[in-house]
Image (cartoon, rainbow, N blue to C red; front, side, top):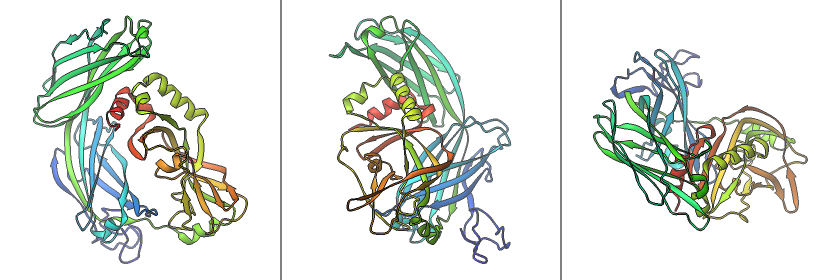
Length: 455
C-alpha cells in the first residue's frame, strides 16, 4: 500500500505511515474467527503482485508473521490462504510450515500464488481481500509394530488395532505383496483404516512404513498420509517396490505421526500492491552487455508414466541429489530480467523438439535470488529469447538459453550470484505441475502421491 500523503510504501496492516505519520485508512488486518489464537497473533506484512507475463498471468506473494501467545510451543503451522477480487474471483493455496515456534516467539512466512489472472485482480487492487486461516499444531509420533513382509504373493499380515491417546485410533490394517512382474519387480502394499476421535479436523495423519532388507538396507517407504475430518474414518494406503530377491527376509518398520490442532484463527486483510519496477533502469541495462536476474540451477529427468510408478525411492533420490550437486545447469530467468514483458518485452521461443505432453519430468533445482550476467554485443527489441529446452516450457520462471536474431546468437555468461534458496524438487506431467517439495523432506509417500495424480 502507498501513503496517500507522502507516497511512502506502507507495510500492510500499518496504522500510520512510518515516513510522515499520516493515518492509514486504506487497509486493516482483522481477526474474523479465532479458537485460542489472539486477534493480534497474525500480522500481514505485504500482499504483492508481480508484473504479469505475456499471457496475463502473475504471481502474488503473501508475507505474514505469526506470534505464539499460547503458553506452549507449536511444532507446525498449516495455512490456507484465499485472495478475492472486488468482482468475486477467488484463488486459493494451502501450505504447511514445519517450524517450531516457542511460546512468545514470532516467525515470518511467505506463501506464493502462481498463474493469477492480472485482469481479474488488478482492476481494483485496493479492494482485493486476503483471507488467511491458520492452524497451529503439535505433532506426536508413535512407534507401531515391526512385521515381516510376507514371503508368498498375496499372503496377508493383519495389523492389530492401536489407539493413540484420545485423538486417533487405528481400527484395522493389512500388508501384503504382489507376485513378481516380467521384470521380477514385486510391490509391497499396505492399508490402514484410522478414525479421528475428536470433534476437530486432524490436518495430517502420516504413517511411515519403511521396508528394510535382510542386510538392514532400506528398500523404500510404503507409507502415506491423509487429512481426517472430525469423528470420521479414513483409509491410508501406500506401496513400494523392488526386485523380488531383495525382499526376501525383509521387514516393515512402522510409525504413526499425528498433527493435531491446538490453536486456530482466521484473519482478513484488504489491499493488493502491484510491484513497482524501475523500467527505465532495467531498459538501460538491457543493451550494455550486463544484466541482473534470478538464476535457476536445475537438473532434468524424464520418465514414462510406467517407469515413474516403478521408481525405487532411495536409488532415485540419490541420483537426483547427486546430479543437482555436481551436474546441474545454470540459467538466468526471463521473469525479472530486462528482457521480460515489463521491460524490452522480447518474444520468447520454446524449443519443444524434445517435449512431450505425456512425459513425467522431475526437476531438482534451487534458485539464486540475484545473479549478474554478461554478454557480447547489443540486444534490442529485434531479438528474441530462446528458452532452455523443456525447462523453459514447464518452469514458470522461464529459464533463458540465449538471445537470437536470424542466424545471430548471443549467449549469457554468469559473473556472480547471491542468496541461494533451499534445494527443491518439482514434478510435472507435460505442462501440468503436480507437486513441489523441499528435497531434504521428500519421502516415498510424496512419490506415491505424484503417481496417483498421473493421468
